Length: 430
Image (cartoon, rainbow, N blue to C red; front, side):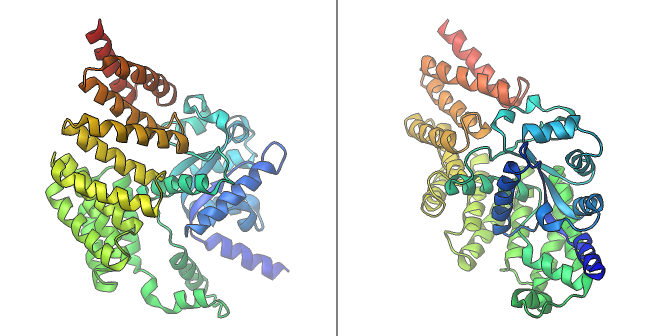
Protein backbone atom coordinates (compact mmCIF):
# COMPACT_ATOMS: atom_id res chain seq x y z
CA UNK A 1 0.00 0.00 0.00
CA UNK A 2 2.83 2.39 0.84
CA UNK A 3 4.42 1.90 -2.56
CA UNK A 4 1.15 2.59 -4.35
CA UNK A 5 0.63 5.74 -2.30
CA UNK A 6 4.13 7.00 -3.06
CA UNK A 7 3.60 6.38 -6.77
CA UNK A 8 0.31 8.32 -6.70
CA UNK A 9 1.93 11.21 -4.85
CA UNK A 10 4.76 11.27 -7.38
CA UNK A 11 2.30 11.28 -10.27
CA UNK A 12 0.31 14.17 -8.79
CA UNK A 13 3.42 16.20 -8.02
CA UNK A 14 4.53 15.96 -11.68
CA UNK A 15 1.18 16.48 -13.43
CA UNK A 16 0.98 19.74 -15.36
CA UNK A 17 -2.55 21.11 -15.48
CA UNK A 18 -4.27 23.91 -17.36
CA UNK A 19 -6.46 25.08 -14.49
CA UNK A 20 -6.57 24.63 -10.71
CA UNK A 21 -10.14 24.74 -9.33
CA UNK A 22 -10.49 26.36 -5.90
CA UNK A 23 -13.82 26.29 -4.10
CA UNK A 24 -15.52 25.85 -0.77
CA UNK A 25 -17.74 22.87 -0.16
CA UNK A 26 -20.71 24.98 0.88
CA UNK A 27 -22.13 25.73 4.29
CA UNK A 28 -23.84 22.34 4.32
CA UNK A 29 -20.57 20.64 3.39
CA UNK A 30 -21.64 19.29 -0.01
CA UNK A 31 -23.92 21.50 -2.19
CA UNK A 32 -21.31 23.83 -3.65
CA UNK A 33 -18.83 21.00 -4.12
CA UNK A 34 -21.35 19.09 -6.26
CA UNK A 35 -21.88 22.19 -8.40
CA UNK A 36 -18.15 22.68 -8.99
CA UNK A 37 -17.82 18.95 -9.66
CA UNK A 38 -20.27 19.30 -12.54
CA UNK A 39 -18.45 22.36 -13.87
CA UNK A 40 -15.14 20.50 -13.61
CA UNK A 41 -16.50 17.74 -15.84
CA UNK A 42 -17.69 20.33 -18.35
CA UNK A 43 -14.29 22.06 -18.39
CA UNK A 44 -12.55 18.73 -18.93
CA UNK A 45 -15.00 18.11 -21.75
CA UNK A 46 -13.52 21.15 -23.51
CA UNK A 47 -10.11 19.44 -23.42
CA UNK A 48 -8.51 21.17 -20.44
CA UNK A 49 -6.52 19.29 -17.82
CA UNK A 50 -7.89 20.28 -14.41
CA UNK A 51 -6.73 20.07 -10.80
CA UNK A 52 -9.81 19.19 -8.74
CA UNK A 53 -9.51 18.02 -5.14
CA UNK A 54 -11.62 14.87 -5.62
CA UNK A 55 -9.17 13.64 -8.24
CA UNK A 56 -5.82 14.97 -7.02
CA UNK A 57 -5.77 14.75 -3.21
CA UNK A 58 -3.27 12.05 -2.26
CA UNK A 59 -0.97 12.09 0.80
CA UNK A 60 -0.13 15.44 2.42
CA UNK A 61 -3.00 17.79 1.54
CA UNK A 62 -1.03 21.03 1.78
CA UNK A 63 1.85 19.68 -0.29
CA UNK A 64 -0.53 18.46 -2.97
CA UNK A 65 -2.24 21.87 -3.08
CA UNK A 66 1.10 23.67 -3.37
CA UNK A 67 2.30 21.28 -6.10
CA UNK A 68 -0.99 21.68 -7.91
CA UNK A 69 -0.69 25.48 -7.94
CA UNK A 70 2.98 25.47 -8.94
CA UNK A 71 2.24 23.12 -11.83
CA UNK A 72 -0.85 24.80 -13.24
CA UNK A 73 -1.27 27.56 -15.81
CA UNK A 74 -4.22 29.29 -14.17
CA UNK A 75 -6.06 29.37 -10.83
CA UNK A 76 -9.86 29.54 -10.99
CA UNK A 77 -11.54 30.84 -7.83
CA UNK A 78 -15.22 29.89 -7.56
CA UNK A 79 -16.65 32.85 -5.70
CA UNK A 80 -19.38 32.42 -3.11
CA UNK A 81 -19.96 34.44 0.03
CA UNK A 82 -18.75 31.48 2.08
CA UNK A 83 -15.56 31.17 -0.02
CA UNK A 84 -14.99 34.93 0.18
CA UNK A 85 -15.28 34.92 3.96
CA UNK A 86 -12.97 31.91 4.31
CA UNK A 87 -10.30 33.59 2.17
CA UNK A 88 -10.65 37.05 3.69
CA UNK A 89 -11.51 36.37 7.32
CA UNK A 90 -10.51 32.72 7.81
CA UNK A 91 -7.59 31.35 9.78
CA UNK A 92 -4.29 30.71 8.04
CA UNK A 93 -4.85 26.98 8.42
CA UNK A 94 -7.99 27.19 6.27
CA UNK A 95 -7.24 25.51 2.93
CA UNK A 96 -9.25 27.99 0.83
CA UNK A 97 -7.38 30.92 2.36
CA UNK A 98 -3.99 29.22 2.07
CA UNK A 99 -4.32 28.14 -1.56
CA UNK A 100 -5.78 31.48 -2.70
CA UNK A 101 -3.04 33.55 -1.05
CA UNK A 102 -0.33 31.25 -2.40
CA UNK A 103 -1.78 31.21 -5.92
CA UNK A 104 -2.16 35.02 -5.99
CA UNK A 105 1.65 35.25 -5.90
CA UNK A 106 2.33 32.47 -8.41
CA UNK A 107 -0.12 32.15 -11.32
CA UNK A 108 -2.79 34.06 -13.31
CA UNK A 109 -6.23 33.95 -11.71
CA UNK A 110 -9.81 33.91 -12.98
CA UNK A 111 -12.94 34.55 -10.94
CA UNK A 112 -16.00 32.39 -11.62
CA UNK A 113 -19.07 33.62 -9.76
CA UNK A 114 -21.37 30.99 -8.25
CA UNK A 115 -23.25 33.14 -5.73
CA UNK A 116 -25.61 35.84 -7.11
CA UNK A 117 -25.23 37.81 -3.88
CA UNK A 118 -21.55 38.43 -4.76
CA UNK A 119 -22.09 40.07 -8.16
CA UNK A 120 -20.71 43.46 -7.09
CA UNK A 121 -16.88 43.22 -7.00
CA UNK A 122 -16.78 46.42 -4.94
CA UNK A 123 -18.00 44.30 -2.02
CA UNK A 124 -15.04 41.91 -2.31
CA UNK A 125 -12.56 42.46 0.51
CA UNK A 126 -8.98 41.60 1.40
CA UNK A 127 -6.59 39.82 -0.94
CA UNK A 128 -9.51 38.36 -2.90
CA UNK A 129 -10.81 41.84 -3.72
CA UNK A 130 -7.30 43.22 -4.29
CA UNK A 131 -6.50 40.44 -6.77
CA UNK A 132 -9.78 39.86 -8.59
CA UNK A 133 -12.13 42.84 -8.19
CA UNK A 134 -10.66 44.71 -11.17
CA UNK A 135 -11.10 41.71 -13.50
CA UNK A 136 -14.27 40.70 -15.31
CA UNK A 137 -15.67 37.56 -13.74
CA UNK A 138 -17.41 34.64 -15.45
CA UNK A 139 -20.96 34.41 -14.16
CA UNK A 140 -22.08 30.84 -13.42
CA UNK A 141 -24.51 31.79 -10.68
CA UNK A 142 -27.45 30.69 -12.82
CA UNK A 143 -28.85 27.22 -13.38
CA UNK A 144 -25.92 25.10 -14.56
CA UNK A 145 -28.33 22.24 -15.23
CA UNK A 146 -29.54 24.35 -18.15
CA UNK A 147 -27.18 23.00 -20.82
CA UNK A 148 -27.52 26.05 -23.10
CA UNK A 149 -26.68 28.40 -20.23
CA UNK A 150 -23.72 26.30 -19.08
CA UNK A 151 -22.37 25.95 -22.63
CA UNK A 152 -22.61 29.68 -23.27
CA UNK A 153 -20.88 30.66 -20.02
CA UNK A 154 -18.13 28.10 -20.58
CA UNK A 155 -17.46 29.71 -23.95
CA UNK A 156 -16.77 32.93 -22.07
CA UNK A 157 -14.43 31.08 -19.72
CA UNK A 158 -12.65 29.49 -22.68
CA UNK A 159 -12.26 32.91 -24.29
CA UNK A 160 -10.81 34.30 -21.05
CA UNK A 161 -8.36 31.40 -20.79
CA UNK A 162 -7.41 31.81 -24.45
CA UNK A 163 -6.61 35.50 -23.82
CA UNK A 164 -4.17 34.27 -21.18
CA UNK A 165 -2.54 31.88 -23.64
CA UNK A 166 -4.14 28.76 -22.14
CA UNK A 167 -5.49 26.27 -24.66
CA UNK A 168 -7.06 22.80 -24.41
CA UNK A 169 -4.04 20.55 -24.46
CA UNK A 170 -5.03 17.29 -22.80
CA UNK A 171 -3.39 14.74 -25.10
CA UNK A 172 -0.02 16.48 -25.25
CA UNK A 173 0.08 17.11 -21.50
CA UNK A 174 -0.75 13.48 -20.70
CA UNK A 175 1.90 12.22 -23.08
CA UNK A 176 4.58 14.48 -21.62
CA UNK A 177 3.69 13.46 -18.05
CA UNK A 178 4.09 9.81 -18.98
CA UNK A 179 7.42 10.46 -20.69
CA UNK A 180 8.75 12.24 -17.57
CA UNK A 181 7.67 9.43 -15.27
CA UNK A 182 8.60 6.68 -17.76
CA UNK A 183 5.19 5.09 -17.39
CA UNK A 184 3.73 3.03 -20.22
CA UNK A 185 0.03 2.34 -20.15
CA UNK A 186 -0.09 -0.06 -23.06
CA UNK A 187 -3.71 -0.83 -22.37
CA UNK A 188 -4.73 2.76 -23.19
CA UNK A 189 -4.43 3.25 -26.98
CA UNK A 190 -4.91 7.03 -26.69
CA UNK A 191 -1.98 7.46 -24.32
CA UNK A 192 0.15 4.89 -26.14
CA UNK A 193 -0.33 6.74 -29.42
CA UNK A 194 0.50 10.09 -27.81
CA UNK A 195 3.74 8.73 -26.33
CA UNK A 196 4.88 6.90 -29.43
CA UNK A 197 3.88 9.49 -32.01
CA UNK A 198 6.42 12.25 -31.50
CA UNK A 199 4.62 14.58 -33.90
CA UNK A 200 1.97 15.27 -31.24
CA UNK A 201 4.56 16.31 -28.65
CA UNK A 202 5.91 19.77 -29.33
CA UNK A 203 9.60 20.62 -29.21
CA UNK A 204 10.68 21.82 -25.78
CA UNK A 205 12.18 25.02 -27.21
CA UNK A 206 8.82 25.86 -28.76
CA UNK A 207 7.08 25.37 -25.41
CA UNK A 208 9.59 27.64 -23.67
CA UNK A 209 9.15 30.33 -26.31
CA UNK A 210 5.36 30.02 -26.07
CA UNK A 211 5.49 30.49 -22.31
CA UNK A 212 7.62 33.60 -22.68
CA UNK A 213 5.61 35.12 -25.51
CA UNK A 214 2.29 34.48 -23.76
CA UNK A 215 3.53 36.44 -20.75
CA UNK A 216 4.56 39.30 -23.02
CA UNK A 217 1.16 39.33 -24.69
CA UNK A 218 -0.70 39.22 -21.38
CA UNK A 219 1.29 42.28 -20.28
CA UNK A 220 0.47 44.12 -23.49
CA UNK A 221 4.08 44.03 -24.73
CA UNK A 222 3.02 43.48 -28.33
CA UNK A 223 6.20 44.70 -30.03
CA UNK A 224 8.36 42.40 -27.91
CA UNK A 225 6.05 39.45 -28.60
CA UNK A 226 6.11 39.75 -32.40
CA UNK A 227 9.67 38.46 -33.09
CA UNK A 228 9.12 35.55 -30.71
CA UNK A 229 5.89 34.59 -32.49
CA UNK A 230 7.72 34.77 -35.82
CA UNK A 231 10.43 32.44 -34.48
CA UNK A 232 7.84 29.98 -33.16
CA UNK A 233 6.05 29.99 -36.52
CA UNK A 234 9.26 29.05 -38.32
CA UNK A 235 9.82 26.13 -35.94
CA UNK A 236 6.20 24.97 -36.12
CA UNK A 237 6.08 25.23 -39.92
CA UNK A 238 9.18 23.07 -40.30
CA UNK A 239 8.03 20.58 -37.64
CA UNK A 240 4.28 20.33 -38.21
CA UNK A 241 3.67 22.10 -41.53
CA UNK A 242 2.12 25.46 -42.35
CA UNK A 243 -1.43 24.09 -42.30
CA UNK A 244 -1.13 22.50 -38.84
CA UNK A 245 -3.52 23.88 -36.23
CA UNK A 246 -0.69 24.93 -33.88
CA UNK A 247 1.05 26.86 -36.67
CA UNK A 248 -2.18 28.61 -37.66
CA UNK A 249 -3.00 29.41 -34.04
CA UNK A 250 0.40 31.08 -33.58
CA UNK A 251 0.02 33.06 -36.79
CA UNK A 252 -3.38 34.20 -35.53
CA UNK A 253 -1.74 35.55 -32.34
CA UNK A 254 0.98 37.23 -34.42
CA UNK A 255 -1.69 39.01 -36.46
CA UNK A 256 -3.49 40.00 -33.27
CA UNK A 257 -0.28 41.58 -31.96
CA UNK A 258 -0.02 43.66 -35.14
CA UNK A 259 -3.67 44.57 -34.76
CA UNK A 260 -3.16 45.70 -31.15
CA UNK A 261 -0.34 47.95 -32.37
CA UNK A 262 -2.71 49.44 -34.97
CA UNK A 263 -0.54 47.96 -37.74
CA UNK A 264 -3.52 46.73 -39.73
CA UNK A 265 -1.60 46.52 -43.02
CA UNK A 266 0.47 43.70 -41.53
CA UNK A 267 -2.38 42.08 -39.60
CA UNK A 268 -4.94 41.81 -42.40
CA UNK A 269 -3.01 39.60 -44.87
CA UNK A 270 -2.02 37.24 -42.04
CA UNK A 271 -5.62 36.97 -40.82
CA UNK A 272 -6.81 36.39 -44.38
CA UNK A 273 -4.28 33.66 -45.13
CA UNK A 274 -4.88 31.93 -41.79
CA UNK A 275 -8.64 32.03 -42.36
CA UNK A 276 -8.22 30.54 -45.86
CA UNK A 277 -6.10 27.68 -44.51
CA UNK A 278 -8.46 27.11 -41.57
CA UNK A 279 -11.38 27.02 -44.00
CA UNK A 280 -9.70 24.33 -46.12
CA UNK A 281 -8.51 22.22 -43.17
CA UNK A 282 -11.23 22.72 -40.52
CA UNK A 283 -14.12 24.01 -42.63
CA UNK A 284 -15.58 27.44 -43.33
CA UNK A 285 -18.08 27.09 -40.49
CA UNK A 286 -15.49 26.09 -37.88
CA UNK A 287 -15.33 28.34 -34.83
CA UNK A 288 -11.62 29.11 -35.37
CA UNK A 289 -12.18 30.06 -39.02
CA UNK A 290 -15.03 32.39 -38.12
CA UNK A 291 -13.08 33.97 -35.27
CA UNK A 292 -10.13 34.73 -37.56
CA UNK A 293 -12.42 36.25 -40.18
CA UNK A 294 -14.08 38.30 -37.44
CA UNK A 295 -10.73 39.83 -36.57
CA UNK A 296 -9.92 40.60 -40.18
CA UNK A 297 -13.20 42.52 -40.32
CA UNK A 298 -12.24 44.29 -37.07
CA UNK A 299 -9.06 45.48 -38.77
CA UNK A 300 -11.06 46.92 -41.67
CA UNK A 301 -13.38 48.54 -39.13
CA UNK A 302 -10.41 50.15 -37.39
CA UNK A 303 -9.25 51.48 -40.78
CA UNK A 304 -12.73 52.98 -41.31
CA UNK A 305 -13.12 50.68 -44.33
CA UNK A 306 -16.70 49.73 -43.51
CA UNK A 307 -17.49 48.59 -47.06
CA UNK A 308 -15.03 45.71 -46.60
CA UNK A 309 -15.90 45.06 -42.97
CA UNK A 310 -19.69 44.80 -43.38
CA UNK A 311 -19.91 41.79 -45.75
CA UNK A 312 -17.44 39.84 -43.59
CA UNK A 313 -19.32 40.61 -40.38
CA UNK A 314 -22.61 39.69 -42.09
CA UNK A 315 -21.33 36.36 -43.39
CA UNK A 316 -19.60 35.45 -40.11
CA UNK A 317 -22.73 36.34 -38.12
CA UNK A 318 -24.92 34.17 -40.37
CA UNK A 319 -22.56 31.19 -40.06
CA UNK A 320 -22.21 31.65 -36.30
CA UNK A 321 -25.99 31.79 -35.97
CA UNK A 322 -26.39 28.49 -37.80
CA UNK A 323 -23.50 26.70 -36.05
CA UNK A 324 -23.25 28.30 -32.59
CA UNK A 325 -26.78 29.64 -32.19
CA UNK A 326 -28.32 33.10 -32.23
CA UNK A 327 -27.74 33.59 -28.49
CA UNK A 328 -24.08 32.60 -28.52
CA UNK A 329 -21.73 35.28 -27.18
CA UNK A 330 -19.57 35.25 -30.32
CA UNK A 331 -22.61 35.56 -32.59
CA UNK A 332 -23.89 38.53 -30.61
CA UNK A 333 -20.49 40.18 -30.56
CA UNK A 334 -20.21 39.92 -34.36
CA UNK A 335 -23.68 41.38 -34.82
CA UNK A 336 -22.79 44.18 -32.42
CA UNK A 337 -19.82 45.07 -34.65
CA UNK A 338 -22.05 44.90 -37.73
CA UNK A 339 -24.34 47.45 -36.11
CA UNK A 340 -21.34 49.60 -35.22
CA UNK A 341 -20.39 49.66 -38.92
CA UNK A 342 -23.91 50.83 -39.78
CA UNK A 343 -23.65 53.48 -37.07
CA UNK A 344 -20.35 54.74 -38.45
CA UNK A 345 -21.93 55.10 -41.89
CA UNK A 346 -24.89 57.00 -40.39
CA UNK A 347 -27.26 54.13 -41.20
CA UNK A 348 -29.05 54.49 -37.87
CA UNK A 349 -32.28 52.86 -39.08
CA UNK A 350 -30.28 49.70 -39.87
CA UNK A 351 -28.20 49.88 -36.69
CA UNK A 352 -31.03 50.38 -34.19
CA UNK A 353 -32.91 47.05 -34.66
CA UNK A 354 -29.62 45.12 -34.56
CA UNK A 355 -28.48 46.86 -31.37
CA UNK A 356 -31.92 46.30 -29.82
CA UNK A 357 -31.99 42.59 -30.61
CA UNK A 358 -28.39 42.03 -29.51
CA UNK A 359 -28.96 43.88 -26.25
CA UNK A 360 -32.07 41.81 -25.48
CA UNK A 361 -30.26 38.54 -26.14
CA UNK A 362 -27.20 39.62 -24.17
CA UNK A 363 -29.42 40.61 -21.27
CA UNK A 364 -31.07 37.18 -21.20
CA UNK A 365 -27.85 35.18 -21.63
CA UNK A 366 -25.13 37.30 -20.01
CA UNK A 367 -27.27 39.36 -17.65
CA UNK A 368 -28.60 42.90 -17.75
CA UNK A 369 -25.63 44.20 -15.73
CA UNK A 370 -23.03 42.54 -17.95
CA UNK A 371 -20.42 44.88 -19.41
CA UNK A 372 -21.19 43.78 -22.99
CA UNK A 373 -24.94 44.24 -22.56
CA UNK A 374 -24.47 47.75 -21.22
CA UNK A 375 -22.02 48.64 -23.98
CA UNK A 376 -24.52 47.58 -26.66
CA UNK A 377 -27.26 49.63 -25.01
CA UNK A 378 -24.89 52.62 -24.91
CA UNK A 379 -24.46 52.44 -28.67
CA UNK A 380 -28.22 52.06 -29.11
CA UNK A 381 -28.64 55.30 -27.18
CA UNK A 382 -25.95 56.81 -29.41
CA UNK A 383 -28.11 56.08 -32.46
CA UNK A 384 -31.06 57.91 -30.92
CA UNK A 385 -28.74 60.78 -30.00
CA UNK A 386 -27.55 61.05 -33.61
CA UNK A 387 -31.20 61.17 -34.70
CA UNK A 388 -31.81 64.00 -32.20
CA UNK A 389 -34.22 61.78 -30.27
CA UNK A 390 -32.76 62.83 -26.92
CA UNK A 391 -35.66 61.57 -24.79
CA UNK A 392 -35.15 57.97 -25.89
CA UNK A 393 -31.40 58.33 -25.53
CA UNK A 394 -31.71 59.70 -21.98
CA UNK A 395 -33.99 56.87 -20.80
CA UNK A 396 -31.42 54.31 -21.91
CA UNK A 397 -28.36 56.22 -20.75
CA UNK A 398 -29.71 56.85 -17.26
CA UNK A 399 -30.21 53.12 -16.72
CA UNK A 400 -26.89 52.19 -18.34
CA UNK A 401 -24.99 54.78 -16.30
CA UNK A 402 -26.58 53.59 -13.05
CA UNK A 403 -25.71 49.95 -13.74
CA UNK A 404 -22.17 50.73 -14.90
CA UNK A 405 -21.54 52.81 -11.80
CA UNK A 406 -22.68 49.89 -9.65
CA UNK A 407 -20.77 47.16 -11.47
CA UNK A 408 -17.75 48.85 -13.07
CA UNK A 409 -17.30 51.84 -10.80
CA UNK A 410 -17.71 55.57 -11.37
CA UNK A 411 -14.21 56.03 -12.79
CA UNK A 412 -14.36 53.26 -15.39
CA UNK A 413 -13.92 54.62 -18.93
CA UNK A 414 -17.27 53.21 -20.09
CA UNK A 415 -19.09 54.73 -17.10
CA UNK A 416 -17.45 58.11 -17.75
CA UNK A 417 -18.38 57.85 -21.44
CA UNK A 418 -22.04 57.17 -20.64
CA UNK A 419 -22.14 60.04 -18.16
CA UNK A 420 -20.68 62.39 -20.77
CA UNK A 421 -23.27 61.52 -23.42
CA UNK A 422 -26.07 61.68 -20.85
CA UNK A 423 -24.98 65.17 -19.78
CA UNK A 424 -24.83 66.28 -23.41
CA UNK A 425 -28.39 65.02 -24.03
CA UNK A 426 -29.69 66.86 -20.96
CA UNK A 427 -27.94 70.08 -22.01
CA UNK A 428 -29.47 69.91 -25.50
CA UNK A 429 -32.97 69.41 -24.09
CA UNK A 430 -32.60 72.20 -21.56
